[in-house]
Image (cartoon, rainbow, N blue to C red; front, top):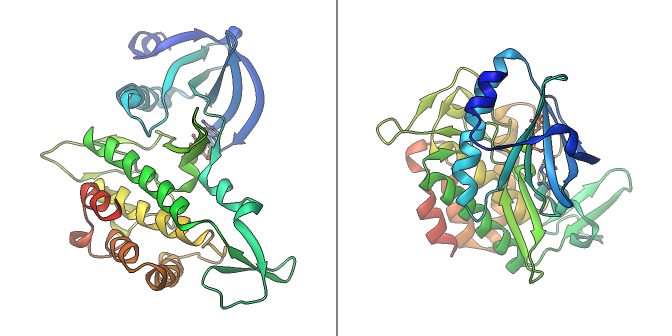
Length: 296
Ligand SMILES: Nc1ncnc2c1ncn2[C@@H]1O[C@H](COP(=O)(O)OP(=O)(O)OP(=O)(O)O)[C@@H](O)[C@H]1O
Ligand SMILES: [Mg+2]
């Protein structure tokens, strides 16, 4: 712990001075709280540490410091440590937002419909009705562009996020009341070297459904993020794609391709670029600059 404190690249805030308010999320390794310190709200992610976690925590904090200059990536202010309880908390800006997955589920984007064949209709088994996804096209593109910007910023710093999905983006309103998107959760990030664009990771960290085959076998590169971005874009365009029955890689591919077809019918250009992002042939997956150019 002493070593960790010495090496910590961000400022350290006394644990007893932080008020933990409501719990936002409880995961396997961490709990996310809304919190306050000196009359400002923060999001604090608490980790229950074991000896073997300090090194990866330091790595995450170095990444967090590096991305503090990014516009579309969450900013981290500091770290709070409770030695007694073996807790390390990462204190981030509170954007007063919610993650993109929850956001797309909100009622305002769904309307009951009788037509099961509607392009974006989804069946609700509890109510035995179909719902139509009604987010405006411009709003979808507004969200997608910022997701791309976030990855563009990370890749420019030679950082691979390695767990791109809707739950790892926060949507919030800025001072002018315009919806903004920032990428969160730097836990799986890697720095990458120009000379070695693909690295091998023994522990596969990403999320099933969002990983292409080589990433799920531990081969991580910028293309790992582009594939996951492609899947996430399919979700933003369609509202909801996962039926909960996708257990294997093949099943998730079927679902993704089914919804990609719907996008193609509505907007051929977006359909084309997403198709390249989620290609099974890695050589065909474009770099983020190309994705950006094709969506702008
Ligand atoms: N700044 C924030 N504002 C609003 N909600 C947040 C914020 N940060 C995190 N959350 C919520 O907490 C969830 C989990 O946070 P995060 O992605 O950082 O943890 P995690 O590493 O995915 O957790 P685990 O892997 O242990 O399940 C997010 O998906 C989001 O719903
Ligand atoms: Mg997450």
